[in-house]
Image 1 (cartoon, rainbow, N blue to C red):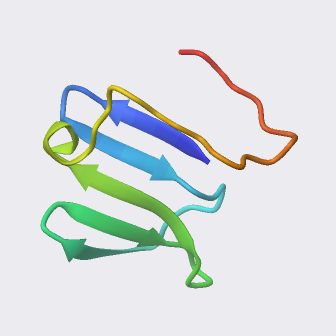
Image 2: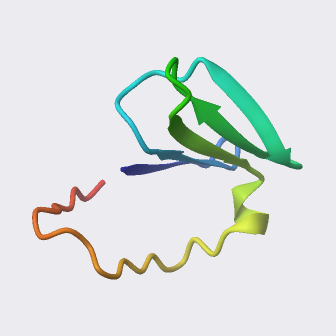
Image 3: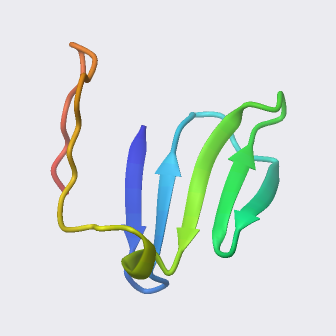
Length: 72
């Protein structure tokens, strides 16, 4: 899973899969779910993220043992 914030558009994309998305469905204003060709959830797109998500803190609990961090 990858979290990508784009300040120029104030959007946050949560990439859940390596598969490309082929279909997007808006489930709430400015929140889209992206699905791959098999119908699996590929990602979540959040527009106006600074108003919807607390970006000052990221807390992970019960993470898999093989997780690694990459600093930007």
